[in-house]
Image (cartoon, rainbow, N blue to C red):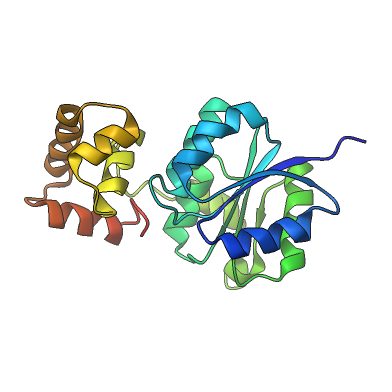
Length: 212
């Protein structure tokens, strides 16, 4: 019987190694990555059935990476494993195509249970986030209004700005021109009504548009 092909993406390599050892008796872990950009570059060639990824990753955060993955591989299942308990961030994850959302404080066996549920076509959210909620938590997530109207490319630029990259470095990473980077930056400043680069980055972090 063919085993489910899984990719792990987390910049904490010790955690990825632990998860890999946990999953491999039942699933096939085909690759691990430490940043969202490397994940996107390699995913199409690896043909995963499911990706377990963190939100806070360098170069491209997990939300942007997940959205890219769903464009490249529409049938791939996404499970977020993160420290972040922000409901707005979880809502954004589901709007980007997530099927599952767990916390790194969850029990190890919960991840295996979540993978099984997602592979059956269901959605899964850790009870650590749903215990104080009434009704369908996932539906509440999906219907929360988006905190911003930025495009995916704008969010990629903003993530890299928040990580301290220069416009030249961002242009190289995203394979676009520095002039295009500048265009996106100043368009975002106008959209979000901020006057400085520092204010733009602070706004993005405060409103969970990017992760740090």
